[in-house]
Each structure stands twice: as structure tokens, then as C-alpha cells.
Length: 74
Image (cartoon, rainbow, N blue to C red; front, side, top):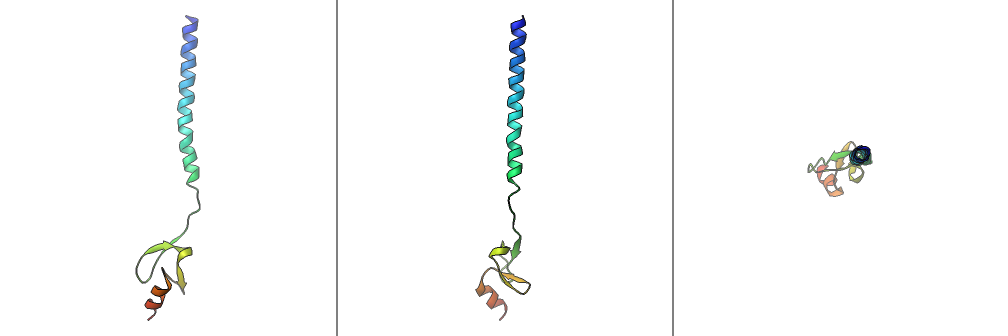
């Protein structure tokens, strides 16, 4: 009878360990969401959205290319 209780206790402990291990990877996924984010801007000429670092700035306006910047100012 003592062996049966010991086996049940071991199975319960293993079950709890496995269950807690499955919860931890979801926490790791949340930490990876802290990646660097970048502001998006809209091209004043065509309306395409692109990262601000890839845009062409002209005053306060953002453009997706130099051609669109030039066409917008004509």
C-alpha cells in the first residue's frame, strides 16, 4: 500500500512539473515581443505605409521614394 501511495505521489509531481514547464515557453514568447519597433509613416503622394527610416523626408512630409517627393512638389 505504501508503494502505491509513493507511485501516485511521484506521478502527481511529474504531472505538475510538466504542466509548469509548458507554461514557461509562453513567457519566453512574451519576452521576445520586446523586439525593437519602428514608427511607420504614410507616403504623402501614394499612401503606401513604410518604416520611417526607409522614407524620404521633405519638410514634415514623408515619401516612399525620391520620385514621389519630386512629383508631389510639382
